[in-house]
Image (cartoon, rainbow, N blue to C red):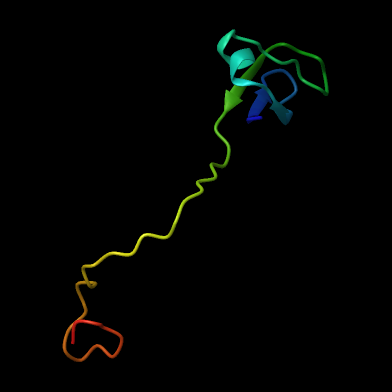
Length: 73
């Protein structure tokens, strides 16, 4: 389930809440856990990207005949 980060406009508390995509799409807005205000805004938090390491077949621009780790030379 996705985690969303919010900031309370009243008390400036920053908090996270888990919510399904369906709940988010319907406009569900949480209340602040500290002051119970509904005046909260979503903030962008950290993003985790999962994937495989992709290696480039092109050597770095500084690579050349004197480069000891270059596979091309």
